[in-house]
Image (tube, rainbow, N blue to C red; front, side, top):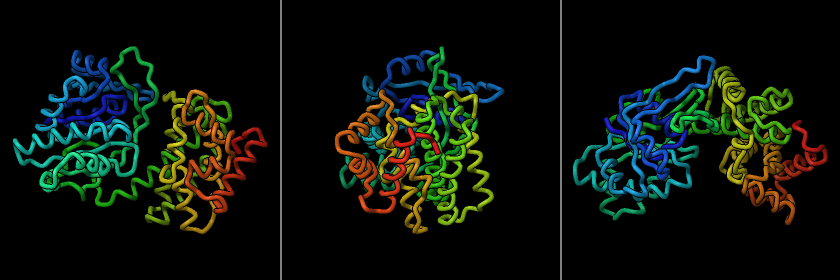
Length: 389
């Protein structure tokens, strides 16, 4: 079986590429990083190390790579003959690979009518649907009809911590042992692609929101409070009792919403939450609070990990989530000088005031109870020299 995976970065190699290999695929990585592409073609394999006491190392073989800038025609050929196409390039890059995938799928239709599944494994809601939209911008109406018949773009929820790497071997990648890859099988034409470790479900939304409002929300809150407390390592931040108490309170609020909305078993969900918190505290993962907290403007958008669960909470319970509001306020205080988005927020606050910054970043309106609570928490944290609780 042949797989084409766009994105030969740490997530692509350490998560998606590993599972594809373990499922029996020969994988072609597509990337613009000439060094990584050349190394993959030279070695035809790489090592994935699990961040745990055993330090188990897994060898991923039967791989090669194509530089999409230098050899786009080769990418088109690979897509045309693939048994599965996946991507982990980042939401902003999906539109840039859409044209190549579209061309490959057109060529495929000239050669066969075998169905194909294309999955965007991104840290976003509706990643595959977004990629499909961009691909369809490249098509005629007749081509769209054919694509609808033969090609599937199922949305997915993916979860695996892949920290910053500092390996002598530039292909080697360290990942946490835990992972979750859930795919919406209701959107797949034909049979589900055989990928070991994937959970296929009929309704993806509960799993997307569970992951977004637990893993992503929790990870960001630990990062921001850890940074503000002068702690640069995530597992050290979790060792701080105040920060651990804060994250537990935040996830109690998101858990209340999730269990009420999707009827998750409360005991089972509470165990899931503790598992997630313990993942953040893994001492074998050296991850910076500044890496996890990077790009705060993106994380503060109204459809992302902080504001979305807070507004959902208000809608469902007609109450304001105090601890989520504190997490949002902490993100607004995040001022890491090497982060362009953090600098932009701080300049906005300095030049136009915190109320303008809250509205601009979160899309909440002044006068709304949640807006005013965030404002109050921001001011209190400033007065108290930004203490976590």
